[in-house]
Image 1 (tube, helix red, strand yellow):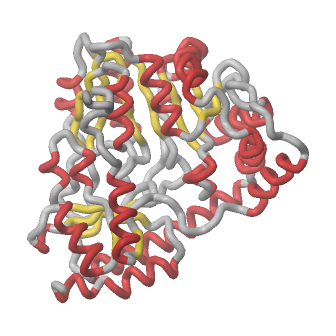
Image 2 (image 1 turned 180 degrees about the vertical axis):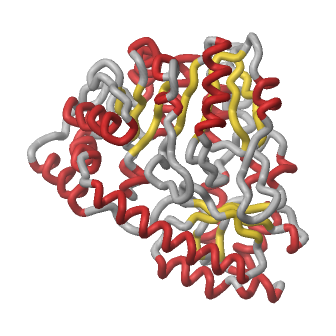
Length: 391
């Protein structure tokens, strides 16, 4: 029998998140690998979704999203980032940000087009590009020279990656897995190239409200960029409801048409009652965001302190809910280190080399998630001394 898996998907295998979670479950490890909270989202959001179910909101939603959610998102972008989007013509609700990314790439990239991405990258980026027939071109984010430094890229490398075949620059800020927040100056360079080469920017901003050092800037807010940017975000990270899979894409009408052309044949519509719950979330008072950030700051310091005590070199993130930690002193590459960490220490983390086109840049550090209860982090830290014992 000939192979049944299409060539488009051959080589991707199972995602590293699935593999590490399976390994963690097998060994009873505390899972600081996969980036989902082990605590629940806010009651007022859940109650809004439950109310929608009880009120009979169980049929297909409008393809682009229910009007109340589109209106709430338009108000949010005006309030938070001074970006003005038309609720009906420029906002599309998707089944998570991952779907929005996929649809944006399928709608914008033709066979042979090149897409510039920054490595390490969220693994769906490359899959989206290759399945559109595009060619990914990676620009490396380099580790800080020492704790307290910043992840950075070489501007010359970015300029060299852009050529006459480039169609899209895909950015992610705040950045998973490094925790980097792109500065206005860095974004201005991306904007300069996009304007000069007539490119589209797809901007993944799902961690927009989780910034501890610096300030989140949406590239769409820079001069000339609103008309050539697809801004993508989601409910899951900010409201600890990753399983709801509520995402969205904001873009001018021509780019929105490209997103919707794919979206209509992927999920068509996203779960109706959960969209009603999302309205309550998006309309949350400022105090919710302040409390969320304060809670994550505390978890960040709790985990960072424990990792440092165990001899790891910690790069405190500027944003997201991930910590990058150097592991050179332990004499293993990232994959071997994580395997040892799960099997002999009882903690799961993510080896980042799988997120690189140039894996050598990811072999001397690992990623830990601190989107967990403080008791979960404490349980992990209780096991961490086993790492120093070499057991």
